[in-house]
Length: 336
View 1 (cartoon, rainbow, N blue to C red):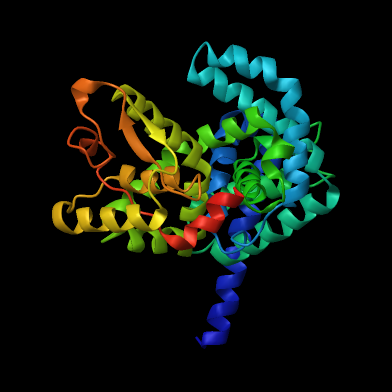
View 2: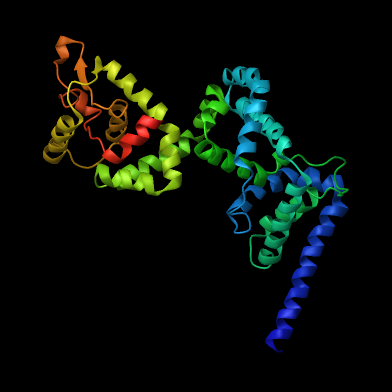
């Protein structure tokens, strides 16, 4: 058998397999959906990693505006859920995201997603994960405006693929849209930050462990868009944690006691003589705290029993042993 004939035969076999899955979904109707829709809609989120969807996003400005618009309506539900448990809070967030995605839902969007799903099925059904192919086929059917499997159009917000795309687009909006945090408001911004915290802190901690110096850590953060976003997102939380720790030590900041050059030189010498791996992320957090003003502050202990001096004193250096100010970050700190 020639290669051309073999390929033609394989294509017929592949098409038949796809047709079989499609017919099973349609003929199964409500029974099929009852048994499989939750599993396959969740599985569709993994399609985000496929090349057909790697470059696909919603409009960042519209996504941010939709998120901000609906947050006010859900504020009380979020507040009540936060006092109960994480599962309840997650359910409220799911409802909130469904509402936000309804504002972004258009026939053109559905058709574009269907085209990409069909391309994935055509590429992957004979060598990809079967459950992904089945999820893609089901999602393509449900996004069809004329489908008869369900009585009403399926909300985009219950499709795992669309929720992942929404979250990625919201991240991009918070990073790129001018005045994004002002548009979102303080409470929505904090919600966005808290949902990212575990992932962001894992990424920042991993980068910190690999860094050989503060300059190296700075390069890693600034050269990696995802890591840079993680830092900007979690910076307020980390600074608050630092200030809380310093307050626990009985210390406070006195701005302008040393010039930036004087403090940087002293801390560089401390690092060279006394500090070594393993690193701790708090060293880098300290630099951002000091960048809040053009001149570096000094940490002064309020308790005489703890002695007096800047952060290099013996007690505070156990938790925050390093101060440094990378010059290239100064402009960014002043602007935001």
